Length: 376
Image (cartoon, rainbow, N blue to C red; front, side, top):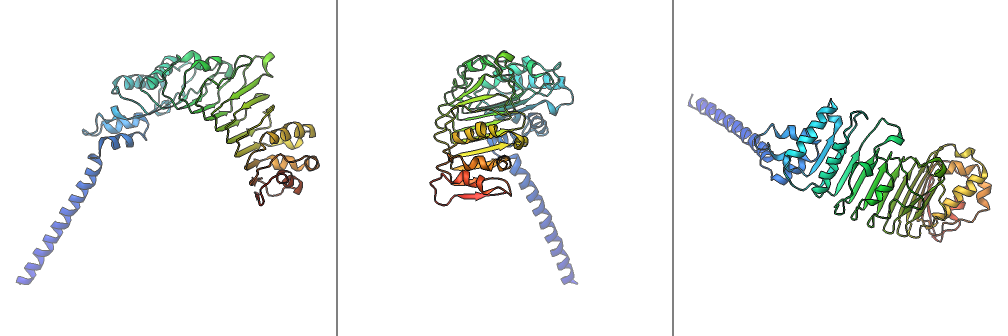
């Protein structure tokens, strides 16, 4: 009898200990989050849209002011059902946030053209620069015609003390005034869906002395008709990487003696010539051509593609998308052409069936003993 009583008491004691242990574990798990160092909490909140970061903080007494310290701001109108709510929210947020530095700002305004608030654009831009941000992305999506897009130089005031090193712009018109912005520390610039216009004999990017990475993606040439043949000049003494995609300029002049990576995407409607292209420091080139160029005349292959390859002659790695199929129809032209590629080590043709003459054209000039060729 006594043995049974003792056994029951031991079992109850063990159960209590297990329950207490579970409670301790739960409390410990909660404390691991609640009592994290403040900088780590701010870093975690940085991954959220700023609206949701604020909503998360108000649920906890310990965190109620943490959103005011978050160094990464993500202000996106898609998070709001009504554009007017987004306007009010951004205005209040910038006013109530503690006057601390910001590392990165991402601003996306997808309102209708009649709703968009240009003063809000300017306030976010000025706030970003005044707080010493290093990274800024602004998407001013618009349903306007490209000729009516908001101009960067009209929206924002030039600043000579900008700390920006990365600038990403979408759906913003770029004109000659863009050069007046003193982005002296800028190393990375990306333009997407940006109508571009400029004065004759002008380079839009030479005023950014530290620029190393430039992407111009799906940007439309909106020059007047009498200037439609004008050449887009890309000059960068420190430029290391250049990405051009679906440009509508007939000519693009590149002067970048240190350029190491070149990526070109051309579709059937947009084909640019590259006069006197010579990239002395080039290591890697990726070229896409889609998809109707096989029907082009022989002159186009000789004058455009062959000229482009000559400009890429220093590449050690060459990746071609779509071009192999184009060149397959003109293998006899390639047989008569000397190969400009003297340093080629790695060739990726991205096609399963390529005539020998095409492969031979790229490899017959290389000084590398055993170049690697990949298909498919």
